Image (cartoon, rainbow, N blue to C red):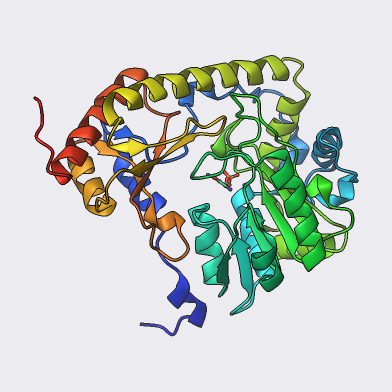
Length: 381
Ligand code: PMP
């Protein structure tokens, strides 16, 4: 075995990647990944691609795209310039760059428990120590931490959305404690019910922040494109880190995303997408009521791609997953979303956007039977 860096001992396989490998199997009903519906992808015009795109490009991203993103961010009430915008190779890259910028061994990072598991994976690799953020009372965690990572709008995995008060309070607390706010916002456009979606970072007066978004959920994840907006003090470092990571993001994807942002039919397309996902969420709610009532509790998410179930009694969800896969159903067990690895109660994260409505019913029926079996409940037939 070659001598690897010490940090590799902190590198754990991503549970979701492993499950994604299983769900490629034909006939598998997947509630596991956060995959957008394949029928939602736009028809990109590949005929109009300029030949100049095949050359190396700017690390910060194509200037026209940075400007277009900046205009959208100003509409959200950010006081920003295009120089503060960096195009990313997926918003996952933003997590990697911010971790490199902010985290040494032992650096305290405040985050909710549960939170996005691939952020935990990256922060751990760089040696982070986690402090649980209570969004109702953020100050004690923030006083201990130099970085605060949050997904305030349609959180992964819970689907939760902060209230107006919580957003303002979090911004004030970050500022008062001198903690850098890292706001991850990939789901904001997948909104089905009215709720406050004002980015927390827009409430900062002067504190340092990184706000990031993604084109994966509303356009296509295969483009591998996202962006970040950072406070001016952090931009030069993030630009150098981006340069060191991949020189620049894919220029063809940047071209396609810019066309999509300029498309006059964009607003209508987004509305259709929201209707499509809202209908799927509602169908999933009905199927859950039918199959899982009494076995689990959940809140209907006002946006995003996931239901977060809390089982009424503790079940080993890893064992449940193996049994479910054997019967052709995949889901995400809750444990990897908790930084301390324990969840008290058992949780399942179920994606509702990928499976067809027929498959939702079939898959949830299988899950119900397996839960009943685990709980020793006699099945009616
Ligand atoms: N942040 C969160 C909270 C996510 O759920 C995801 C993807 N599921 C990402 C970041 C990464 O998204 P992408 O790299 O596709 O932009």
